[in-house]
Structures are given as C-alpha cells and as structure tokens.
Length: 88
Image (cartoon, rainbow, N blue to C red; front, side):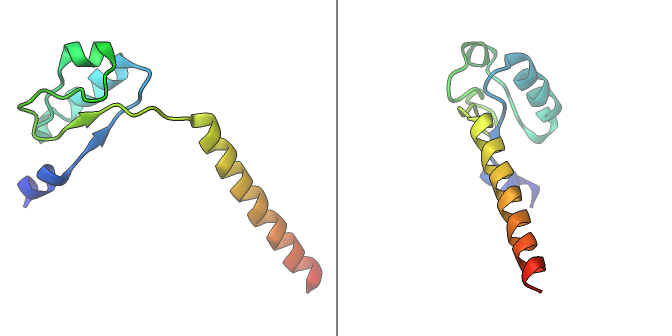
C-alpha cells in the first residue's frame, strides 16, 4: 500500500530557497525521495533525480496574492456575519 501512495505522490517545495528544499528532501529520503543537487541549485522546475520514487518540483508562487485572497475572504465572511447580526 505504501508503494502505491508513493507512486502517486508529488512534492512541491518552496521556490526561493535551495537550502530549504535540500533539507526537506533529506527528511523525505526514507520515502524514496532523491534530490538532484545540481537541478536544485539551478532552481529548475524538476529537482528530483531520475531514481527518485517521488518527483520533486519547484513551482513559482505569489504569496502576496494568496495572503490578499485569504484576507479578502476573512473580511467578506466577517461583513456577511455583521450584516446578518444587524438584520436579526
């Protein structure tokens, strides 16, 4: 069963820090993760070695946009709750 899970697994690790990616990959080694050190240093999209049981990918992210979306969702939820309380 573990092997099937590992076959389907994908791992996405922070785009801006090769050191953090290496540390995470090292902790995941017991699951069959094998990091390509050169690819990790270059910061390409795929950073796992061909023999890795779980592929490792680096994806560009926009943390500021995600924070803004989460903030908007919280503010919108709060304003709906306030409108409901005022109507009651």
